[in-house]
Length: 245
Length: 263
Image (cartoon, rainbow over the protein chains, first blue to last red):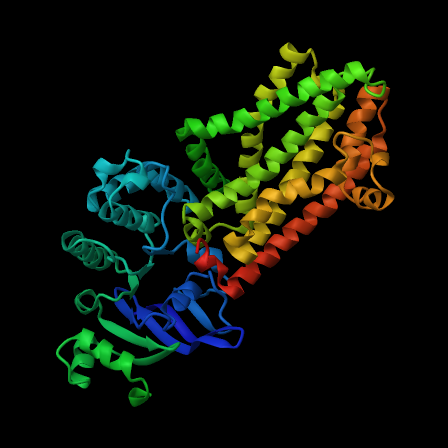
């Protein structure tokens, strides 16, 4: 399988503070990689570097074999991102937002693309609604539609189901599984929902204090650490770093 | 440069303006109030001083020119702040937009925003005060162009600060024009300023623009040097603002401001 994301020994320092300490990983085509770690472990910084919002202090990032530093615009055309911490303009209707972002990503056949996403994400009835007046679940599906408007090869998800009720959360997870299978895209998923990670991810990276402290398939990590589920593994690794370094 | 992307970002702000009647009202309301107020002051001075004796509309014309500058600068800042307030900033910067495309789109949108406010205000002056800003003739275009470039320049400088320092820079965004206004010699000749302030005023394009507006209206002559110097200084500050914006963008990428914007 081809690697769509290749991260080679990236570091990020803020002054003397080392936020990310030389991590490397790959994400293959048609793979969802989980990025786990406690708050402040370097997940958001890593995602920020992959999106070109942060410049690594050292190291290289390749997306679809293109070096990010030299091909930022070309790479941004093929990736997208959602996070509960960023929103679409609240005063615009859903349709206007999707239209605007389709233009920014130079999408061809905008009407068809919006219709396709509306049907898949069940937002057809929301298209003329004001984005800021939607419920969390509706906003989440609209954000997902925006993130898929450019048919990304690489999707970066930061807590994609945070604050969603179980039904909507399950809908989003099922959608992501199906969409990944259909389009063979790579997904990097940062989440604190261990059930979600176990269900969606082929493998996971455990980060703490800017380092990868363990990685592997969820079931292998559970066995390796003698626990019954990924949450217990997460707690064990989060609480005692030295044991695993 | 992609016209499609520039148009896309323009649409984002166009939708925002056209969806909200209070926003349109806000754009029209302040310039109209400002012009009406200065119109009455202008009338008063015209009948009680000798300096303005031959040019009833001098103060009012300068008020209109200054308002255009103010609206352009604030308008540009507002477009940038809208992205921060709506927490859309990250979405914008992860879209495949070049800095030049973002700036071009905001420059065009800021002009349209300013014109929405300016045109009704100009239309008011004729029936209310019997004054037409068109008395400035063909040079009106050059004066407006100079003010537009300087307004955009200030907007880009402030946006650079927002990029570099985040929303805490917002207060500066509102106060820039007030800081520069005394040195701009908008309503009075440059000789009114103390000598040290005159030296500062001479390195700003504003003084040349407003001196020339008064020159045309009062003396009925054109000093092309004023227009020329205004453009020279504008070219200098505009280039500086673009360079600073790129510098701030790179600094924000190093510092992490782009992912924490809004906090």
